[in-house]
Image (tube, rainbow, N blue to C red; front, side, top):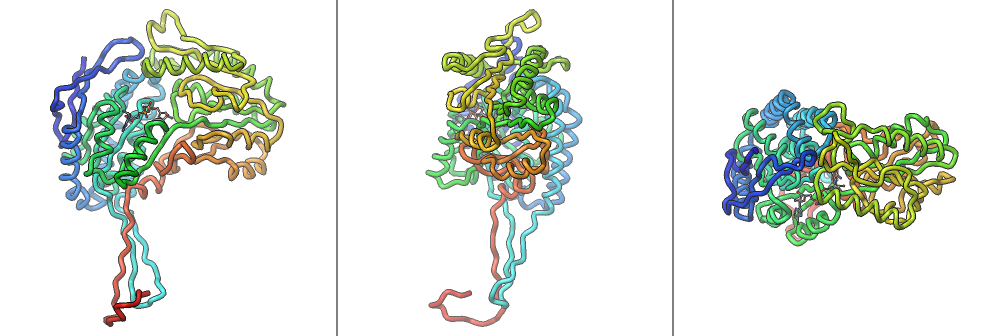
Length: 490
Ligand code: NAD
């Protein structure tokens, strides 16, 4: 069993009150690591360490920060396989995905390293020709980064390199359900000789996160998690007048038109809901299929879903791993029962998956409901598991209406070979992102985030780093004259 401490000021420290909690492997059901439960005094120590390190970190020039961030990327690449094993052991996600996620984390470090010495301001011509006006991009100070359990390193690295490249220091609070890979990342930061205090990690449950959010030393909060907790964080941030980025849940429409490539669309539908065992914020959990392809797509999906290879998350042959933790399993099973009772037609799955190779692992069968109406609970609430709702539609306008008739606005997929249709539909999707003829594709350069109850702010892409900066405007009057003190100058 691996014991972990908190990572504060570049050293590993025991929680002051001595609290501990267990990390349980969702495949074996066994406790495999023990973590420190940080209380408010530990959070205070972490914020203090970050605050002490921040001026020095911000004072390093961009080129130096870029060098260090690139060094971190190198170390992540060197240790990608071990990191993937830590994460898959902790949250049951298949190793083929966590392995590529580690390389993507390194890519994000390199991408934001490239911005560290290119945080340009603008020179702005004013009406008054005797004033030189320019803008600067400055760090906020200490940022709180709070993440969910489904992809701890990806979610963290959507934020961390951008925050650091901009000259901020951070206190990270990973999910209590999957903290190990974040702590292991700290070991890699040590190897890469990141100065102490620039990154601090406090582990613990919601109370630890709440103490961090409430801490007066925090200048900005960046949160990835559920809309319910997002609301509480936004309320606390509002009370304390702190800026906040929220990356929340989704119930994304994946829309297949009659003119789509049926094979590509089927694969996109599978990726959308059974990739990552459906435990992804962008899950294409509402599949809208036009009548002409409805029977064909539904039948093929059922066939393919039945053939998905469930197994040991650490086995490269496994296509779907376990659900990440017991509370999540219970939520998924309750949602499936709810869908049955409200009359959705169960085509496949619907229960725990069992078998010799699956042991006591928290496996759920790939589950498909057809003939779902958009007003059903199964179509409106985020399940965060391998449960697909298929909704038929006749006309394009109807598809748009159904797609947008949801409180969430994270992502949408459109499958069509008609470029005019695609161009027409993209602006109509009330979502932060749209995929056309692909699904669940990520890129360091492309901004990611939500609208409506899926949150606000952007990660990755240029906006991903700008959101970690404060824009300062500077006016330099070089006229050498004094003007009327009782009239505003312009
Ligand atoms: P969660 O909201 O329960 O927990 C997220 C984090 O918040 C955890 O670290 C938790 O300990 C912490 N937390 C809990 N209460 C808190 C409080 N009062 N103050 C501060 N922190 C608190 O979410 P989860 O169950 O870990 O993750 C699943 C959710 O995350 C889903 O809704 C999913 O869609 C969402 N998610 C969104 C994205 C995205 O980028 N949009 C990505 C992944 C997951």
